[in-house]
Image (cartoon, rainbow, N blue to C red; front, top):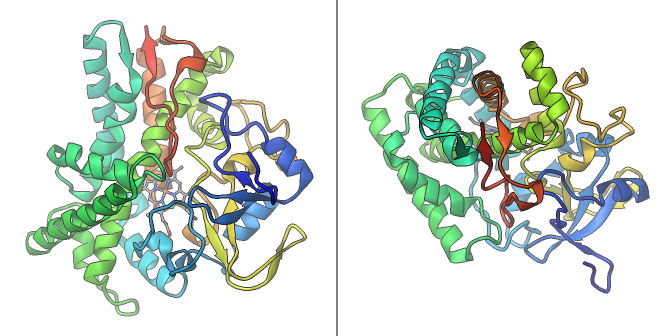
Length: 399
Ligand code: HEM
């Protein structure tokens, strides 16, 4: 839809629960930037082409910290005041990220792999015991990342319904009333703050405990507030994104039986297939808002200081200028430089964990359920709307 100034309402309607907006190809052809109106009503400029999305995300003149300032254009109607890692600029961002990275290491994620496998096996045992059909979102896509982020952070799994409810409101843009979103922000902050205080007294082997103890000669320690915001963002980012990506990925495989068959015969292709699924079926295009700190050009188009840019990985990942036959889903594709985990300073801190979960879930599901099929028409599968990250909300399968 457009208004007098030809601004398009964002997010655009999808015509399928699986594919991003059908106008992306046209927008990329027309110009590097498309003028949009965000759900807050504020104007923004959607960055549509691969090279420009990559360039904006790699350039410190496009700020995340400025998105928190009073009067800055914002994505959703609820003000966002949380100074999480994602909402910091340098030098603060580098300092906090270096401190976290000392503990959130490749080794810690590798140590979780056997636990991911066990949890996947347990959930699939329960699914198999229920008969020969299930909702895969409820049975696997959601509970697995929740269990893993609880284990990583040392958050009690028994609390999952409570923090799941807050997290659901936190991720809402227009799907919940503003007051409910703000109340959830406060509740999550208080919940993490209490948990961290307990861990400081009685540290365990988990990541939050480790983060309460770090101290670095150059970078100092994480302040109480930094640590609490970090806990909130790890808890939220750690399950919402991966859960949606699992649902979207399984739906894509079940609706592309030729590709699924290749993976059944050659399971060693699963890690590459996971990258291809991340490229084509990401959990949304709403996440990457930046504010220009000075007048600058993007793709040859002038952008003024203070304007909001929304880089779109969903469009960039399908850009024919960068990927050959970009719209084709090909589990054998070798090129894996998609932008679903972002780019540059804020590149997803949890990408290693997300990849481990996606690889184990897809390999195990295909192996254990050789006759798995979609138990509904594609057009009838509901996809969430009005949220920061999203995917299918139900995925009926049978075997
Ligand atoms: C498929 C799953 C995931 C996707 C698609 C995803 C996507 C992203 C993207 C696009 C960014 C960059 C945002 C920006 O530049 O504005 C990001 C940052 C981040 N992600 Fe993820 N993520 C996923 C899983 C995870 C997991 C499992 C965790 C934690 C365990 C996590 C924690 C974070 C954090 C803390 C940041 C902020 C990093 C920084 O600002 O330096 N993510 N993620």
